[in-house]
Length: 145
Figure 1 (cartoon, one colour):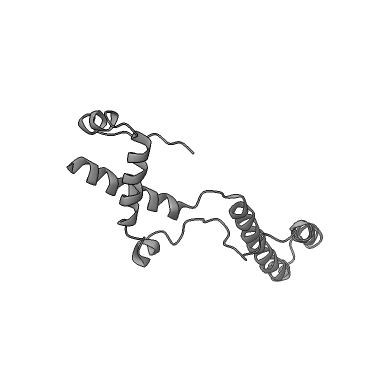
Figure 2 (spheres, rainbow, N blue to C red):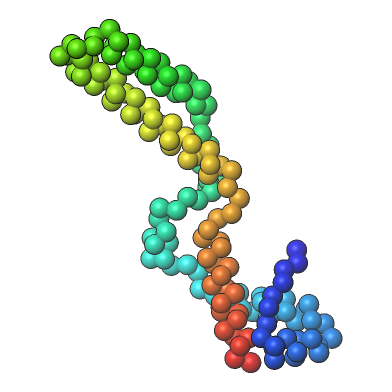
């Protein structure tokens, strides 16, 4: 894999004079990475609501066709009740258990959608933050030379 790194002009001129620039930059990056601290647990807590890829062993979403059919059926039942019992003072009470079941199914559906999305993720933002910290450290070190 090849990446581009931008150096300040004075550093770039020195690197360009080297006979094996690639080896030098590789060694410099490897040396810098050794000294980069891991992301602390406190820093991880700052991002606890972010969506991350599924971890090894974490299961993806179950087949949601049955849940979708059940949600559709509940909407049909609610619609039928409203049509049949329009004006009935007990209508709200009759609909309430259906609404509660509908909310629970919608929560399951939303959780499954999140799992489906997470299963498709390739980029882990924690790794991105770690890489940025490493690059900042390397930039700081190279800027001092």
